[in-house]
Length: 313
Ligand SMILES: NC(=O)C1=CN([C@@H]2O[C@H](COP(=O)(O)OP(=O)(O)OC[C@H]3O[C@@H](n4cnc5c(N)ncnc54)[C@H](O)[C@@H]3O)[C@@H](O)[C@H]2O)C=CC1
Ligand SMILES: O=C(O)C(=O)CO
Figure 1 (cartoon, rainbow, N blue to C red):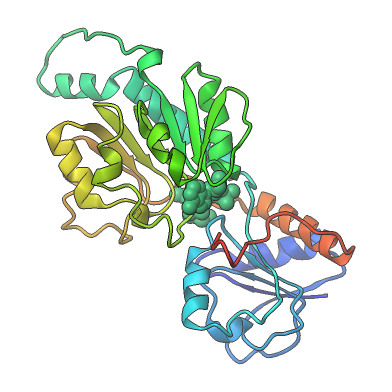
Figure 2: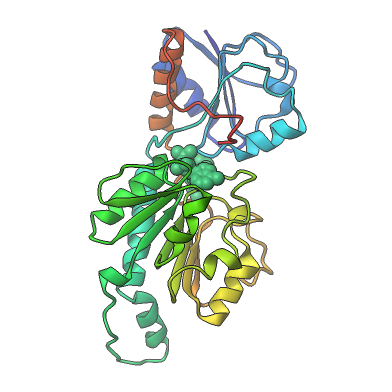
């Protein structure tokens, strides 16, 4: 079995050796321009078009992340990049859910215990106890309730918050109220105090966090964008912060990354920023997952994690 690998920033040697260990019979090589030798599987992130095009014998392509929007947008511009019938897989969890839980739970508790307000009071050297927030006024809403959103929802429910989620179809997560489809988006937003976005980037979800959506949240709402920058209309968030409708935001992803120096988001006192690291690919867990999936394919099974080209995620 031949496996080709391309990632612009990962430690290639670690991946080649690691995959070799996972699949002892396989030959794993870094792909270089001009390499047209046969391959059964490709492990990629931002793949050059020529790496995959024409490879009709591929049995699977693995995206080395959870979101496949960058690959699918390239595929739209170069439809022959992925030969017809070759399945595209993505990473399902592989250690990312725990990272998302850490990120979301710590920030929700930060807002719930009003540490943002106390930080502002500290800047003024003010000793001033504030009223507690009540859990019943702190409903948390997950936009997107898949592999990552579902786990984040469950971890917040375990902290005793009212938690709800919104997805394409209904979900059954313990302690989480499920809303589904465009027709239930309004009901989901009504009363949501903390909105956490974990949707995939698709034509249906681009720009979804806009003024119209923000205005339907509870007053003094909080917004956490952990998915993709294009989901959020940044100017609409700034307007909602200005009006007081939104009290604070925590952003990990941006329409343009790295976030340009001149962006007004940097200096806004009620916006916290991290540089797209809410959850990163953990090589060991990812390699174990990919090897397991390859073994399932080789055994004629249907593994999970296949991307729907129709749905775009
Ligand atoms: N900031 C970061 O470091 C990271 C961000 N991500 C982002 O998180 C996203 C989610 O990842 P997973 O949970 O693994 O994806 P997933 O595919 O398991 O879940 C997606 C969820 O969104 C829902 N959804 C999709 N389109 C919808 C629509 N039009 N209307 C309503 N619901 C819709 C689905 O029903 C599902 O519940 C990724 O696509 C990626 O963009 C992922 C990893 C790290
Ligand atoms: O896996 C993904 O989709 C990411 O955004 C990783 O940072």
